Image (spheres, rainbow, N blue to C red):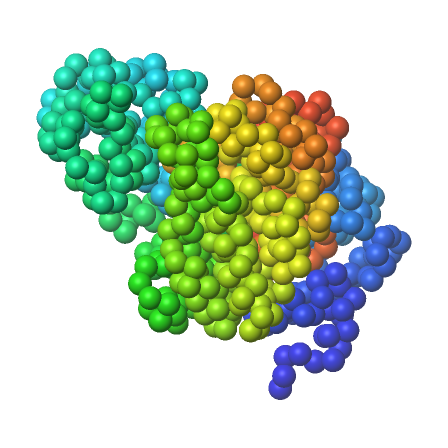
Length: 604
C-alpha cells in the first residue's frame, strides 16, 4: 500500500512544510510531519496546536528572531523530536507542554536560527594546526618573532616555515625580504609560504641554486631587485617549492578526528551548518563515518572538486565517473555541487581581471603593466564542465575571484543554459569579488547565486585599493547592488586554517562577518563603499535562509518556524537593536542542533 495516502497529503498541506519538500523522506519523517498537523493560518494564531504528542522542550521568555515572515519576532519555541513544534508567545507555546516537557527560561536572551557558513574548509583548517597553533602575523615583525620562537625549539636542520603569510594582510603591504628572514633565523633555513607565493631565506636560495643568473621556472617567477639579485620572493613555481614544504603526515583517522574537533569549534561560534567547499572521496568518507556514529553536530553540504586539466572530453568523463549527484544524502550530510578553480586570488595578485592590474603592483612583488592575472583553465574546458554538470543533474560552482573570471564563468553558465535551462538549478559563483552591473544582471537572469566572504573586504580592501583604483573598487563585494537586483547572496568565511573563530585564517565567527557586511568598515578603521552596506536583517539572512537556499534546504532550515529542523542559537546581545559595533562582540551562549544542545557556554 502506498505511503502517500490522500488524507496524509491534506495534513501535510495544512502544515508549513509543504508536501513537495518531503519527496524522498523516510516513512518515519513523513509520518512525523503528518501527525504534527499545525493549522494553516499564516499568523499561526488562535487554537493552532493539534498534536498527538506534547513538546519535549520549551524555550520561553526570550526574544526570538525567527527569519519567518509570518512571525518575525517571538517569545518562545517548542521543540518536539528534532523539529520546531510551535513558535509564538509564551502563552501560545506553553499550550504544547505536558508534565514531561522540559522548560528552559531564556531570561530575555536573544535567539537566532542556526547559522550556516556557506564556504569553509573544516578538515583542512583543523589539520593545519596538527603540529601546533598557527601564528597570527599582522606585520613583518610578527613574522620575525615567530621565526625566532621556532628557531629556539626546532632541530638545526629543520626548515622554519611561516605559513599563510599574505602581503595584503601585513601592515607594510609587502612581503618580507630574504634579508629580513635571515635576520630572525640566524642563518638557518627559513621560508614563508601561502600556497601561491613563497619567500625564501638565503640558505634555502643557495640550496635550490637560485642566484642572479638563474633561469625563470616554467610555472612561476623569481622576483629580483634592481641589481638583479633574488629578493627571496618566488611567485608560483610550485614544482620548485614543493620539496621544501614538510607537511605533517596524516592518515584517515586523523582526518575524521580533525573534522569532529572542528565541528565542536563551529558549534561554539553558533554554526549549525556548513557548506564544505573542497572535498574528494576521502573527505566524503570522513563525514560518512561520523554520520554513522551519530557524532556529527554540524549539518554539511559537500562540494566535490573537479580538475579542469586535459581536454573537454576528459572533463566530461571526469564528471560522469563520480558516482553521486547533487542532493543525495540526508539532513546531516548531503551531496552538494561540483567545483572548479578558474583563477587565483586578490591576496596574491593572481585573480583574473577584466583589464590589467596596472602600474601599482608593488604589494604583490612584481611589475607588469599588461598582466591581468591567471585564468587557470581554457574557456572550452570551463564550458564543458558546465554542460556536463547541467546534463547530469549537478549543481555547479567555481572559484572565481576576479571580474574576468566571474564573466568567464557566467559565459559558460549562459552557454549551458541555452542547451538546458539552469534557472532553477542554483548554479553558483564562489567568491565573486568584482561583479559589475552587467555581471549582476546576468546572474539574476540565470538564477545564479553568490557565495561571498566579507572578511576579504575587511582585511584586504585597504591594501588593494591603490592597485585597483576607485572605479573598480566600487564593485568590490557589492552586496547592496546584489540584494537590490534580487540575487541570492550567502555569507561564509573561506575558513582555511586554525581553530580560533576570530583569529583563524580566515575568521569564521558569523557575527563578525555580519558586522563587516553591515558597516563596510575595514581593518584600518576606514569605511569603504558605504553605499554597498546592507541591513542587519539582510546580513543575518546571508548566514541563515540564503545559505540554506544554496543547498536547496530553505524549506527545512534557515528559519525558526513550525515543522523545520530545530537548529538555533542563544546569543549574548540583541542582534537587531544593540549598538552596531557590538554585533562583532556577540557571544554564543548555547547552540542547539536537531533539538539537542551541542554547546552550552555555562558548562565546564
